[in-house]
Image 1 (spheres, rainbow, N blue to C red):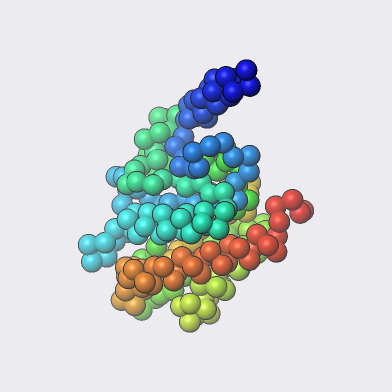
Image 2: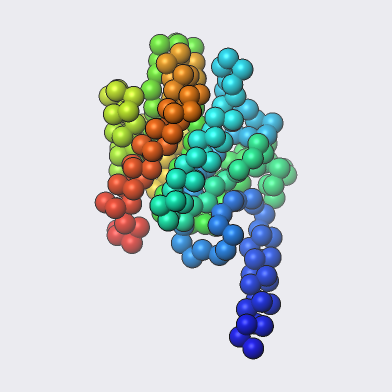
Length: 228
């Protein structure tokens, strides 16, 4: 009898979960609590910035996939906003909004539904000054978000051999409207020759992802979600 109920109940729960007006790629079973949601910036019609024929949306996706894989191998519960070249605005239940705002609102809906301990949005940077390089971490104006940004910035600084400080994300929609500790990770400047090499080199990609994993692990150890 219990086996029969399970066979009926689980498909119904999954159907209800998948009927939400958003797309999120998670484990193939229901999870009570997510450790990390990886937000893969841009996608579909929105390519983001570019250099030498390489689109930001593709680099974001590549790093997002690698980061998700590494975190899951360490038994973290991880969600990701897209696993393909796809525009999240296409799923928006708010057709009256501009496309960019539909995209951002969809990312917020995913984060609000999964309620992760941390939300990390992956991007790459561009500047007309091609000497500008290195990672930039943008954070919410909140204590835990700042601590997360500081730890990620310090780890990436060490890899890039730089001394950068995280920046407040006051103008950014997601940094203003998410409840959980959230950061935007600008992995480097695609417009800079050295950063471009790192962002497109397979070994460097692996190393950068490993740095991100270590930083996330450190934050989750130092600042458990159940602490004020």
